[in-house]
Image 1 (tube, one colour):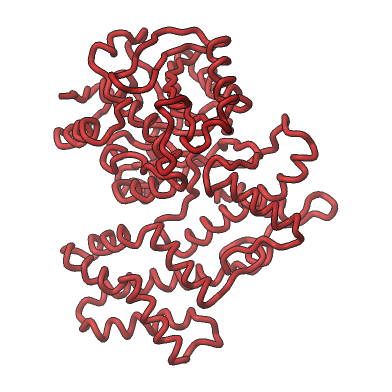
Image 2: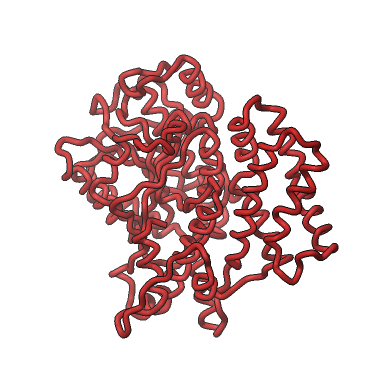
Length: 490
């Protein structure tokens, strides 16, 4: 039985101890199941912070990521940081990244000092503790046979391995700060990266429930090592992709959604108890960050931090089937073919805002009969349909069918039954109508009602965005929008 040390996880109740113990015993990956004897091999009593990084073919990027992590200790002297790197290869694409992963192992051997070998639990991949500059590095090697990552589990499993190990070490009292940071090899963290998890938010809104996840600000930057012609080719596409991410988050925030934050795995720090409660990262080929945050949002507050951003390098990537790398490639292909990148029409966020208001009114208006409340609900959001389709019987039927297909009314009733108070019912429904179901509704609205708009047109016609000033001859409109978004913390 694993015992939680109160020194390192303050105010953890017995029930919460059992939650963490149960997770580590039943759901954590085998790599994290160290015998107690392994802890005695560690050269330090404890580290202050932990960060995990998945690394597949990252020989050109990882050393600079580590350099940025090492620079964090210059802010506070004598800080000890453990970086857990899960070196990995995919069963279907091992040969593609074999050379780069080999170079990465060679880099560790040449520039790092081995501290402890053979840390691996029985029948698991090699684990080696090394030191480089002023940080310790725990290398988990899933990049070679027979430890390659299954195709269908991808980066989700890789992140889970690293975070499970971090949770185990926090639980064992080997890491003081109970926040599990996760980033990537192409990320450059700011010098106060770890310090920001030391202070909890103080605003009344943030303290309604304990935070489960911190989301760092970000911005994409040019890769100075990329050939100029490659930069010129991909930077415009990446700028458009970042604009899309920020546009979507801003639209959700304006609509009143609780899921208005970027889903980028490089930006996260999660509370260790919350991590155990949601049973870790989902083992998915891609999108693990989106679904992980979706789960975390139901057990605590999602806090979007301000301050210095994590800088993400410009690069196309095919490591996962969708996400920033693939999105950049797709937009670049559109641009090179003379086509225009399109995004959701801003009116979908108007509809979402009306929908969420109607939900609130439904739950407040419990004295009316269900049929009457349903009619009021439908009429209140019908005005958000395109003008040409308002008062159209067919579209009223479409709207009712859509809400029925999405199980909206069924779950409104369920939320009322499961809770004795209005705030409780609202919380119950909000947990059900999560980021995934929000996206599903938006896709229906795009496909059946509003269509899509070119990115810049969508930005310019959004009622919820302040238009940036464009100084003649100084920058183009896309750069102006990026600066505006970054300044306003979207």
